[in-house]
Image (cartoon, rainbow, N blue to C red; front, side):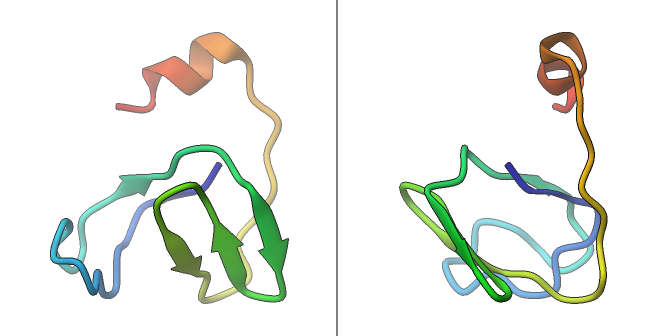
Length: 61
């Protein structure tokens, strides 16, 4: 799952620049491309991998 605090561009117009986004679960990941059931996210920057509890995951709304 991707949780991003700053959307740069959404080609489908769902999010505005500067919005945050939480993706659905990952189907695959190659280089900077994070694929979910309905979207392809191009990840920019270094980012970090985090482990979270289900409780914390649900709170990301």
